[in-house]
Amino acid sequence: MKIVVSVIKADIGSIGGHIKPSQKLKETVSNYIYEHGIKTKEVIDYRISSTGDDIAILMTHAKGTLNEQIHKLAWDAFVEGTKVAKEQGLYGAGQDLLKDAFSGNVKGMGPAVAEMEFDERPNESFIEFAADKTEPGAYNLPFYLAFADPMYCAGLMLSPSMNKGFKFVIMDVSHTEGDRLIELSTPEELYDIAALLRDNHRFVIESIYSNNTGEPAASVSTTRLHNIAGKYTGKDDPVALVRVQGAFPATGEVLAPFSIGHYVAGFMRGSHTGPLMPVKADCPISYFDGPPVVSAQAFSMRNGKLTEPADAFDQPFWDWVRDQVSQKAMEIRRQGFSGCAMLPYSELEYGGIVEKMKKLDGKFKIRK
Ligand code: F6R
Ligand code: MG
Ligand code: MG
Image (tube, rainbow, N blue to C red; front, side, top):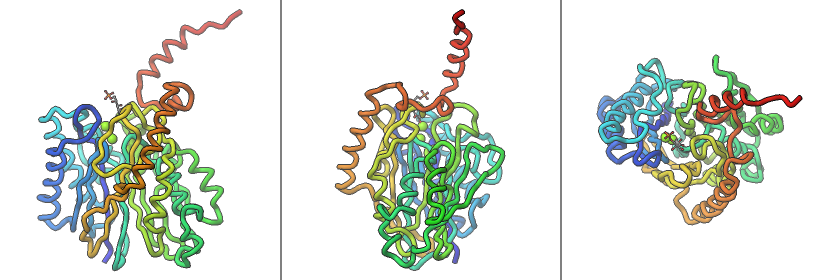
């Protein structure tokens, strides 16, 4: 049977600023999915988690990707949650629900979505990633290294089931009139892939497929809130799904590149550069409204029924990584607004700077 794994995530309000959603909010979203998804048998199984100020709904079902019922279920759960967020006076209640009425699927409506449909393996294993205070391109480097670089993915050298490499589907997210995509394959087109993926703001991995089996290996949310709302609404806080083991990289090969804590966009006011810190699930946001964080929950699955999550960054090794990443965060924060510490003009999330620059522009004079 073909199973679909869908993860749909939104910020619908959080405690004390952008720290974390309330327990009641998470329970409301969870109860809604249980009442209207599990009891109706629309959904086979689900899990609710939070990363920073975002709530992620992970669902398994057999209705295909971009399914209207499934997406509406998640949307309605977030709408229901928003009522509670307002009652509790949470900050940014309903922040990511950018449209008034649901239409078709949640793509382009605010929530981030990543989905994969596949024939379930007898020992199906996958990882749900959820990042906060950053953009979809934050996954470019770790997934490039995990799927294309034998320095991180030893399986590319050692495993015959990965010897043909992977196909990367990359989206130009600056193109707003439709999905503009390119397909490139490793190892032949490695340099072309790198040339695109260096630009995290514009070119984003949308999905990855095994060249050995044709099977889907990874899926990333590519929503740019910036392009939907045309004004500051927070960073895009992307989710991703990655299948692991067998014809795919081992779990540890997918996790390894997250030890770099590479610098990404999205620290304070969605307008600064910060290192991506691998954190435990349900971890709040703190220093300088950051740093940008990513959680990784691994699951096994049989007939669409999920195990409990194994929190992949909840292990002593990652405490050491978090210390290193904290140092990287302090290092870049020491230079405040200067140069690469703040994002380029086009990526600043606040409209106010545009007004300020216009006003200043009029005050410039050409010296005779
Ligand atoms: C939000 C975020 C925060 C806010 C900041 C100011 O996801 O990253 O850094 O941008 O707390 O929030 P506002 O402008 O809503 O008061
Ligand atoms: Mg927020
Ligand atoms: Mg967020």
